[in-house]
Length: 224
DNA sequence: CAAGAGATCATCT
DNA sequence: GATGATCTCTTGA
Image (spheres, rainbow, N blue to C red):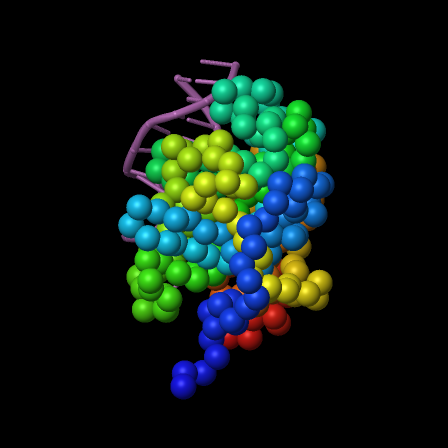
């Protein structure tokens, strides 16, 4: 028998359950926290692709200067003003997509950015350690490639259809949750300092942001 | 290891 | 016409 891997921990769980709309209809920071440990699944024409959420960021509303909706209600941000539980996907830097999940009541524009997944399955494949790093879902742009999601999926309803989030019984304890400022929002004034990024402590699949100020505060955490 | 540049385009002014 | 919720590669100490 192989030793227990992180994946084994993910797969040996209770009955999968698609998260209902109520899950997303809560304060955005709460949803960002609750998403840690949940499994994001895309049933593609070529097979199932799935990963466990290990890193998120909350974009809490029109007053949040880092939130796209703070610039008003436009065609791009329209989805965020709608019902919770839908995808907000946009193209960034001309080459990458970012996947967000709309939160809170209709009319309140807010969303959670999924920044990293721990890979669980890709068309029958369950071991990803030998993959090229480029294929890993350990970053907002890279996880969209992994999940085969692009802006054609913008507005997709997660409560019905071939993309969804489910609870596989993985519990992320409070002591395992690290909070830091969000990444790449230098323009956001006071809001860049708010602790709205959440990730699973010591998980090897969290993204590798370049901003040292946004890194985990404790170098002693990662003894290398 | 840190810092900088380039790729590349939809969206908004 | 400028910008950006990214990522990889290159350079240099």
